[in-house]
Image (cartoon, rainbow, N blue to C red; front, side, top):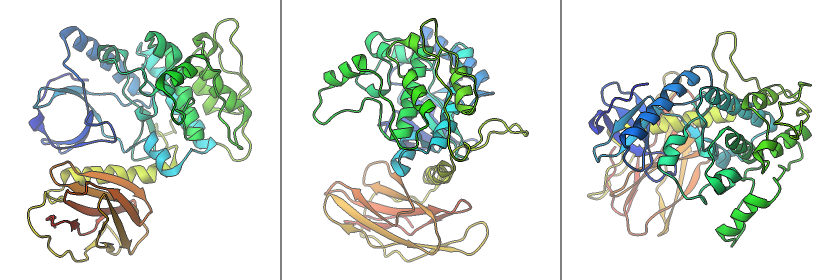
Length: 437
């Protein structure tokens, strides 16, 4: 890991990632052409904090060589003076996956949990707790492999956030006392598994509920058990144990949790906490075995979420194309030219026709529809005047309603992939926007 400072002119076409309101960007390094994610820090680093961060990153780099961890490889300086951690650009986050497909299957949840527990185990062995295991820190590579990122308590202590933020995923001792340790990480793992199984956090906000009331539930109510018809009893008990209010009642080590999740039919129970902590039965699965996860004979990890791999590929290709393509929709300046249908040939096989119909402007929303000559996974690109464009993954849908400013001008474009090639529709405009062809 290098902490060499760089300047923003080494990166081009910076665009926001996800819903992090500018705190995460994607950009292409001008020299190498490689795309990176940049996690923007909310303030400047003093010398001591910077040294501590660099130490964490060095220890994590070793852990990442043997576990599914994405770690920053350097600190960069943006042209506005802000610092950012540069890391691998992944395709998709767990919240995005669940938003598109709903809760995961039991098999995929087990594989996901084993990967995350393995990542925590390696980081803990390197002396670095995560400090904030939340769904947004669970990412997927284009292959579908899940990874855990955003490790380290140093920056979390340097830049504390509102305790009400991501309340359902923070351990009670973290909310109450600011504890950022290994047992708090296990609580976060349990909360992520709960979300994967149910589609919601362990203590979801209730309509009209004040933040203080929800906080009280997190601190005092017994941990919930995930409910679904196909849930193996042992898995439900493990998730509940990870969510125990008392840290001493949670499983003792992430490595034991990883072993439980990776071998659900094992007879050996997880390593429990100190005296008095429960010893839980191993999960018992019915039906087909879980998807394989872990190093194969060639030493490469296998993807654990087949659905994630397809959508992740769409996401990462769309992001990379958006950043590197010089002819993206431009700010409006004159009447739009008439767009004609075009064919974009893939690397092999016939060209694919992808056509966006004329958008229907309804004031504060715009209805889009499109057609394709092949079965593709689609993304919608929205380019408003004076703002960064954004790309929305819509899977196999061929219609989408976009919320817009009723007085702004926009260009729209559809992008699709079949896993082998990327296909782009001619852009369409509303309200007199000019779109690059």
